[in-house]
Image (cartoon, rainbow, N blue to C red; front, side):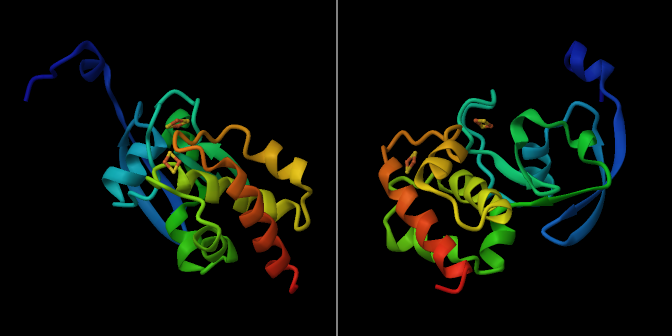
Length: 166
Ligand code: FES
Ligand code: FES
């Protein structure tokens, strides 16, 4: 088939090795493909959401090598030989954040929720006892159009307590 656009005409493909939620993948991806697209369309991990697609809302957050990153702003080829954790992995591990988010009604439409949980998980991985201000600061890049903001502090605090054995 003939390329449809100038970008498609210039597109090249690359082979990457990627570990996602502990599973190893070898994938052929367009060099311009974003990580969120690969997770959703190639691996069927649709828990990672794309909302703004411009790095402004946090809905697409995943953890890469221990740090929360915006997958809509991350080229898949940048992730070669790296380890990614998505909301599916966090749920599969039954992380206390999942139960706390349900208990404290942190979602209405739920579209932003995976991004919040992923970002909160990255925070708790590096800081097991965050203050309210530290939680707010960590979640500052996550937007919720339904206005659930006050609930997230309670849920993250409770999950942190559980992880510390409280
Ligand atoms: S979809 Fe990535 S930051 Fe909004
Ligand atoms: S729960 Fe609807 S956008 Fe946050």
